[in-house]
Image (cartoon, rainbow, N blue to C red; front, side, top):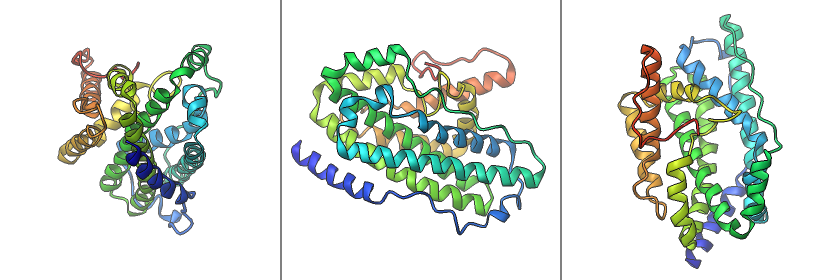
Length: 293
């Protein structure tokens, strides 16, 4: 266990050393409106822009747990992560502004991040979980790995499908940074789960009951907004293959062998989108994740 921790920590140090804000200075922004984008692609970009901006709310409440923030390596990473995600939001908004202005299309305003002051219930939970802070940190790193893997894959799928060379380059660059974020979270989650029997027992069960895809719930995005994005990106053979690959990747974490969170989320989302189009209640299996939780 000690060897795994030392190995992963060294790899994480190298990842943090590569931190840098997204460079878009050489992109041909004047080409943003050169090719018309379909409504589904624009909806994905708006969702991604807004969710990237939500990171200003993070590092508070459970996401800013004292045990987590006392780790200097994790703290350095999270500071860089926040700055890089905010830059992603700015780049996506710049593209959307240029594209929609050039095409005479309206653009939804940026959705503001929720209040950075967590509710009293979350503050109380922080106090109550101080004795098991290592489990909270393991949960944070695990949730981060799941969300970053989903985000990275979403950018890659949209880059492949958008049919817009300049946008493809922008999304590919963002995906590369998301891949670095994902790697850090995964390496941290791996050694923390391996070292903590409590984390291995608690987190898979907690994830089955409470995990929601990135940006969904509460004062964030409504579930149906994510459902439409996922229906667009997870459709077709490449989308189904991407979901399966993500589940196999997360299954390699200690204790996570049979979860398949992405397949469950996709199943639930597709059922809701189908129901929305017909006006019928969504027939979502009881085992599927509740994205509104």
